[in-house]
Image 1 (cartoon, rainbow over the protein chains, first blue to last red):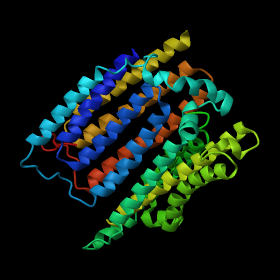
Image 2 (cartoon, rainbow over the protein chains, first blue to last red):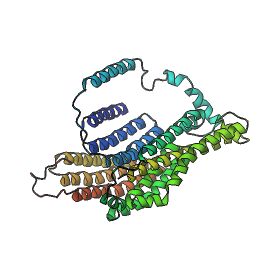
Image 3 (cartoon, rainbow over the protein chains, first blue to last red):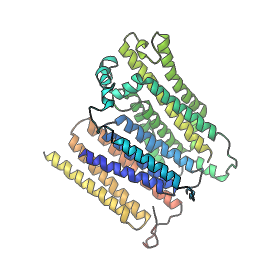
Image 4 (tube, rainbow over the protein chains, first blue to last red):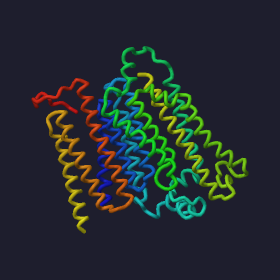
Amino acid sequence: MIIVFAVFLLTLLVLTAVAVVRTENLFVAVMLMAIFSLLMATNFFILDAADVALTEAAVGAGVTTVIFLGALALTAEQEKPIVSGRWLPLAVVSVTVLVIIYASFDQPRLGDPGAPAHQHVAPWYLEKTAEFIDIPNIVTAVLASYRGYDTLGEVFVVFAACIGVLFLLSVPPVKPQKSKSSDNSSGLRHHLIPQVVGRLLVPFIFLFGLYVQFHGEYGPGGGFQAGAIIATGIILYALLEGEAAALNAIPKSVLMAMVCGGAMLYGMVGVAGMILGGNFLDYSVLHSDPVIGQQMGIILIEAGVGITVCGALLSIFHAFAERD
Amino acid sequence: MLLDILSWILLCLGGGFVLVGGIGALRMPNFYTRMHAASLTDSTGSILIVVGVMCQAGLSLATIKLLTILIFLLLTGPTATYALANAALLSGMKPQADTDEGRSSS
């Protein structure tokens, strides 16, 4: 039964992807991308990857759509028609698709316990997490502790992406637009119903974000998801009250400090491990009891991840919103 | 047993409402009627479906979570519809009684 549903969702996914490519209207494309992300999140959930599903829903369907819309406000709504040179890309894509389909014959069956991915270190993680780290959500244990280097890399990718976007967008626009900015900065102040409902929801979005952040050891969640959710809450606030109010609440310098500080907190936890006589990102030495040390390390680096992601998303949002 | 039957009735009714809303969103003549079809049935459908699932869950933490989700849906759904209609009105799309001229892509 679940497989039928999964195939149905995958079919919808393919249809949405084709529609995204085919549509000329960029606004429609952005909306379809949000639907694509939501379908993808549902698919991840069916595959029992609740953490990934939460990330996809928060980042893909939530924040990315807003940032895309912000970018869209700077450009035209219609795609430029492509006149020539379609055959070479088509040939490249066809060959790639054929190669990928050929490669998929070698793939193990879905959920096959004999698959190499389930034979290598996964059984060890499942067996030993309760003993070494003692948290119920093994995904968080893998992400934050066993694969701490990879996650550190991801955080620095987010950091670098944020810096890159800010470099590109901090150049002042050539022609400053006049009357439009005053219209935008007021937000939705004159729309009573969205404002009242939005104000009602913002605190609960923050609460949920914090829950996801600090409940990551026990259920699906963690720094990436929580950072995205809290960023969504602040973006909603910015849309309701105007961007100036959001910048007033969290100034740009604080956002920059968040982006740098989160990544640095992560790195410092690693260095602290080295100073206390362990390896880089070895949390066991942080406390006299190695299990508690691991838990402390995970909570600290998850906080670092959340702070960086939240700061980066908000910086990018403000960078786009400022240019309108 | 009785709860099971009740929950299935609610779930099927809710599914029916959502289906009718989907058909309405495709078949209605213009933007505002389409939105009307989609939004009202969606709210009703979500109430019925969530209550149906609550009957399945029984008295547990899941029911409270479902109740929270229901409140969230009931707050955001109509607001989104209002915002959509308001945006359409502000961008100059006039509600029309005459169906032939109001035909426009949403």
